Length: 307
Image (cartoon, rainbow, N blue to C red; front, top):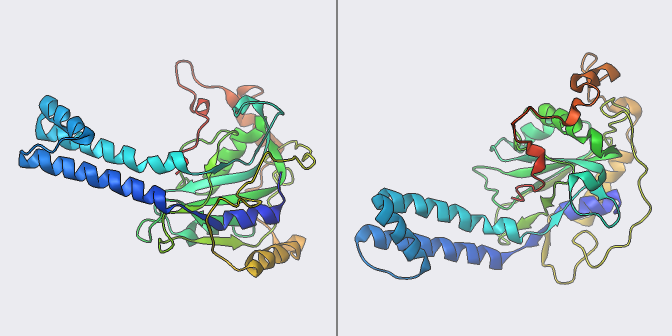
């Protein structure tokens, strides 16, 4: 468990991963050379050439090109498997990282991969304290980023699905459409190079309270300090190379501005928008986690895209 200041500082600090970027770039270059060899009718050799040659034998040049695109996507996905992760979920002691073992979730995390402008996305959460950081594949032309909304009180795992659905709808449904289970993990801020484009910002506001807002009918007691097994990104890891996007005063000032807000400075809901107890009847007594017969439950996938 970490406090808000430690969480925020970690979310605006990027892990520098130049070796990973070089590995991905090398794989992409080798794939491009292999395809060029296939198209020129020359023999290059090597594992990647062999994969494309087999695809050409079965589907001609079009088959080789399709396999080339598939392998390029797979090479880019290597970043997903090498980035450090974090989760806002609190698990039962000794449990595995599965939804059934989550006690509560303390942050709403939304991924924006559509290229929507950051200012447009943050406007949905005006008045709420939140953090935004770019993700690995962020570019100025197509921004990809993550918005983290720390909660004043955690949401119980049984209530998480309806709460996340509300958050996705509030975000205008332009965030990553993949459902997020309570056990989802997310990549920590990371960048391939010092000169790579990236962004991190903190918006002052009140901590959003799901209980006060009627989006959760109960909450959980935040546990006492839990000892960590070793160094972490949030508390400092001597083996981690990082880039801090902001001076120390930036986070401190945002937190101070948040603490100084009055009750009337915050009104996320309009009069006809506030959730009431009857709104939970949408799911029925036991229907919140039901799926239609024969339809695969998307919440069975515990793993976030990590990208």
